[in-house]
Image (cartoon, rainbow, N blue to C red; front, side):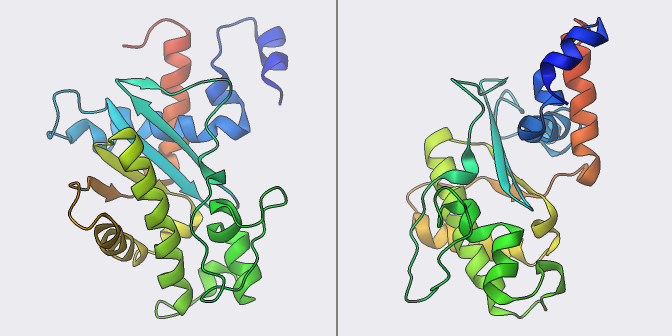
Amino acid sequence: MPSRTVRDNAHAPFNKDACDGKRSRFADMRGDTTSGYCQRLTSCTAPVSYTHLLTIGTGIGGGAIVAGDVVHGMSHPEMGHIRIPHDTAADPFPGSCPYHRDCLEGLASGPSIEARWGIRAEELPVDHPAWALEARYLALAVVNFVCTLSSARVILGGGVMKQANLFPRIRSEAERLTNGYITLPEIVPPELGDRAGVCGALVLAERAAGHGR
């Protein structure tokens, strides 16, 4: 539903990050930074001040909190459409993004995995070569965003990340890519799981009504 429809008919404060489907990862992020892992982060004085989240599923979306605030600019961030190195000799798949072909989403989303290997991600065995390639692409994205945002924590969610063996693979590849130049933050799933978006939407609604912190 368009956010203006909610605004015009609800007769109550609203937050477009909770209403707009393309901004829904902000709700995921608010949920986990308010009630999940980031509340217990002790490596900085403001636990939720610097974090970013990527959701890897039917597409790839992302959001960031910097100095305690959700990052906005001329629009919401399009973290899924960054360009990453694509070795076409090792991975001849051209990519599935209708706009950029081999951007991050075009190479690493759930539909991209299925188009490349001819099988849905959730049906691939743990030892399938798809996971090493997926970890490579996601590690490239994580390193780019950590270097840009200086994140204190990285949260990776979405259906593809339910393959738990991806987390150590991504960590290992990210360490190889950074080569000791920076200390990587923790890379974790959303502690609230599939409830992160709902909990975050409630937090955003509470703040829109003027009752949040």
